Length: 200
Length: 200
Image 1: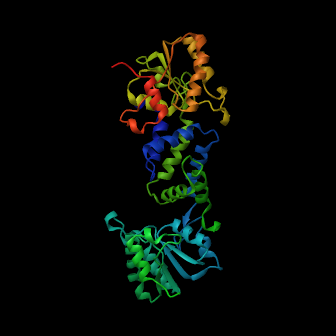
Image 2: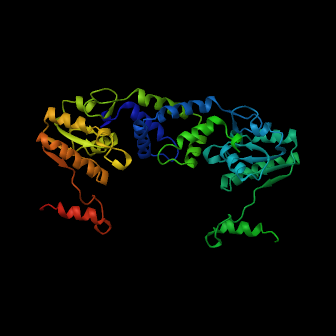
Image 3: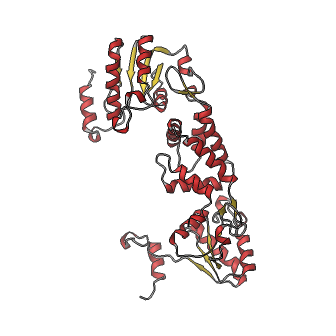
């Protein structure tokens, strides 16, 4: 049985199955697809993967993934460096940018606090944020961590750490998602929406 | 917006989304996972991909993917080279091997006939199969193409091509899947199961 699978094939299947959401079945489907694919997709993918770490750095100011440091957002004079939006991951920067509703700077934590998984404040870019806020004294820090247990804990922790700086700290609003349905909204979200109600 | 995504990141997302079943969202999730992953998974994956085409060949006899030609199955004197199991893809060899119920040789067609997709007999290893059967005169050719429209058409076509050789040609049994439920079996499968009924 083992001998029927060429080693490079078995090896790629094994490595692909380490990716999140990719099980052994998907991994072997992808591997055999890449074997069959005549247009050099496997080689293009290999090159793109090699370029990923070789061609990117973390911005020394906001810790977003970029081609150079400072990143284009930190280096852009048209962006309001007085507003710092704190997010967990580089992907979250993309999500906020897609709204086109924020024109300030970012700070990427690279995770959320989760002591059970060994993720303590030292593992995240929290000390760097506190130092950045202390020295640059921005007009506002917006905590845009996820509305999950870890995200909330991270936001609370950062809020405590920033209090000494005297800089105003805000948190993204919680409430009904646009296009949602009251009937199907979970109770926590609905009670947050009630708490956060605004006059018309 | 575009400037917020480093080019190597955007490039990897684009290439990953060309894989089957991987949309832009999954592609960017995988990309940011690979960026974050500290254990060099991206590099390991790049090397495995590069080794995939460099380290594999098609067996000159059965056209399975292998490290050398002939492949271990064709080279194995313990396997019955008088039985040839014809399958569509290298993955199907694995599926048959897992049953441990077949100890003969294989022939991988590398696809199934599908004129609408431009897959004509010349694109598959059908001429090679006919030549192999003609010269080696095996005891049996088992057509194990998929029980789909394309698989059935491919099996019929190959059967016609092999008739002149006089070699017995069989087809995998169609019937109720083990563990299945009569109530939920589609009518085509059920009528095939009735046709193929056997005395107890």
